[in-house]
Image 1: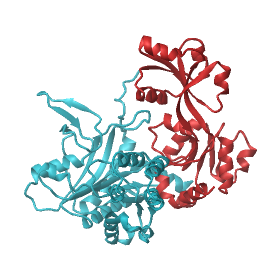
Image 2 (image 1 turned 180 degrees about the vertical axis):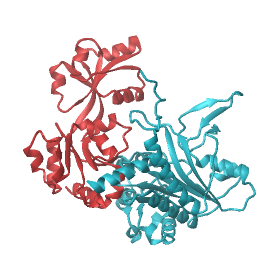
Image 3 (image 1 turned 60 degrees about the vertical axis):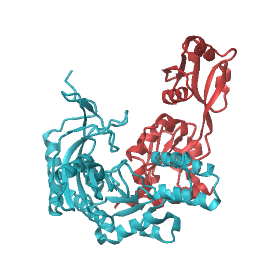
Image 4 (image 1 turned 90 degrees about the vertical axis):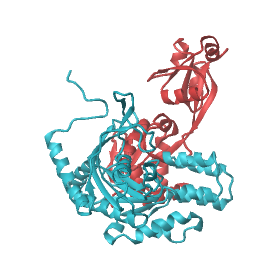
Length: 318
Length: 211
């Protein structure tokens, strides 16, 4: 029996590596021209119990400190900014091409080791900062060679704020958000109906998380959907037409990572069954590392982008 | 752009197939080719693929199908699948139950005297979750075939299984002790398709809601 790689990891051989390298070089050129300087950080970080993606691997150093293989690059870059850029005038722009290590659900043959390409824009508030990062994201996907991709754009606080405005309290609030996170809209509706609210409010709560589409969604929106939507509109108004054309608003999008505070986005391609990457605003995270600055970033899963490229090619031929 | 191709729908073979095809007829999707040919699996001309119900979630999760119909029992058993559950279709109602041999409940006796009950099932995840949630220690025995055989031979004290009418249970001298969940057919969607094909999917959902 040949020796296996650890579960959830794999080898990359020259044919694939050549394509991955060419792909990341095209993306790197976009990041570089937009002024994002590349950084590298240690694969190991001290375990701080961060609220980012769940870590896949933990270990100890020789002094007994608990170390974790980083589960994303956002938290290490936040640490780096707090430590190494404590007095430098913002905004700061960083990019990276690095492996992250994530706990995955079993039975799905998913990778625990992901090659990510991403940027972090630190010290640039919404909406300008968000619009800049979306522009860089579309530039990277264009350079990658994808033609059919779309960006789903929502706000992590939109639906929670709507629940608050209708005085939906715990534990029902948590149950509704849990069903929404699971993508169980039958469960979402069941929990909302159980609240016994007036018909019109029940309809509003049921409808909003299913709203996705173009800028026409803003027309005739209920005022209670409120501030988060105003923020999304402001971002949209700052996008060039070519970027705006890629946007699908999604009012049901919740934060995929615990530190997101505002706009959140995901990259979709019809040639691939799951998002190619994601991002969002994290205006509170830097404060934990001593530099309270608003920030926004994204990470693309390079291997997923590579798969989508091949599938887009195949669809064109087929 | 490929958004013009018809939505591809995963249709379950077996007990849920007729209800699903009736629903698709109602939605204006031509199911005649599917009804006419029992052996073909893929009906590209009408955007239908057919498969066993337990395979529907993986085809939808991977994006090989945009939409699918399967039982809530399958979705509960495959809770890790990243699919959206869009609608309760109402048909195909079955109950997930805990059953044991008629007479004094051997499961209760085993729990009392041995501290653990042995349970045979085709749904190990549902059984494990349910027994844990109700604070009982259980040894879950996964079987693939007729689960009714397991308690009759003394291999286990109880079973967790899906039943529509309870006839098979009764014929095998088993009685329902607890009802775990009511399971109906569900419409599920691939999360990426749900965004990229929102208009088409919402159109279907609206008509389903207006039945």
